[in-house]
Length: 87
Image (cartoon, rainbow, N blue to C red; front, side, top):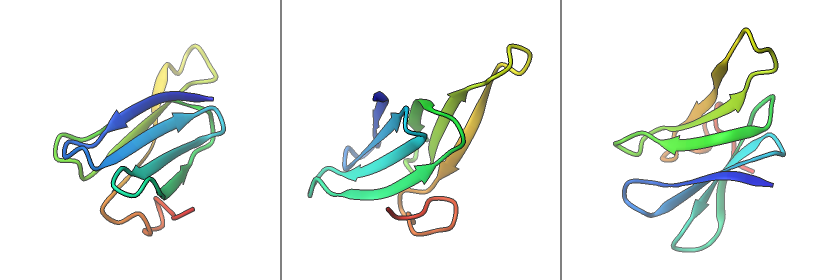
């Protein structure tokens, strides 16, 4: 299930956060998936940085003592980089 969506500042890319432990980047001009970011827990939140160069995801921590944490980040401009591999 998709839990959150975010549009890039230029409105050309959509990011989704899902229960399947992925965040996906979608090209809104073509409708094609651009990249998949795999994390260790279900994604609860996704956001772009103000300049659109980074995508942040957040998962809910498994322990009440640890609170929430940043799960991963990647660059939509370079989805083939190791930290944001292509699908």
